[in-house]
Every structure is written in C-alpha cells, then in structure tokens.
Length: 97
View 1 (cartoon, one colour):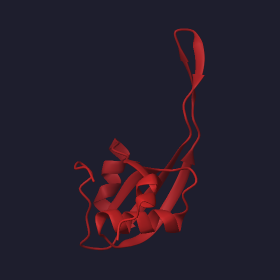
View 2 (cartoon, rainbow, N blue to C red):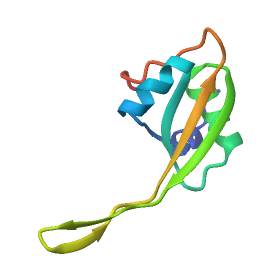
View 3 (tube, rainbow, N blue to C red):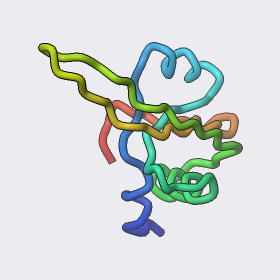
View 4 (tube, rainbow, N blue to C red):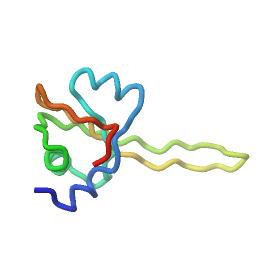
C-alpha cells in the first residue's frame, strides 16, 4: 500500500554519469530527505516501485561554496541513497511515479 509519507522520503532520482555506471551492478541512486533513515528509504522504494530492496547505503554531500558574479553563495546539502535491488528487479527512472 502506498502511503503519502513515502513521497516525502524520496525527492528525486540522481541521474549522473556515476549513477549510470552503478546501475550495471543493479543499484539505483536517489536524492532523499535529510531526515530519512535507511528503513524508511527501503520501505518507500519497495512501496512506490514494487521491487525488492536488498541494501540501502546513504551519504551526505555537503554543499559547496560557489562564487557567482563576485557574490559568494553556498549550495544546499544533499542526502543520497544508493539502493541495491534483488536480482531480476529493475526500476526505470526515466519515467515518473
């Protein structure tokens, strides 16, 4: 059953060069809420996409300091989750929920 809280946990899929490389090992990378825990992320992925999740690894990327037209700014902190799926399971991240 899909709960509305699951949509708050998963922010967006992360589509980068590195995330496409890890997709060969049956892993998918998602941007998640900073307060989300590993069991919450696992439950949200299984409920929203209907797949079996084996493991969830998380990382917190600190926002970088950037300079734009002489003004100093800071990017936001981003929490990412690397989700390992069971064999035979897959998620098409190019389509929406």
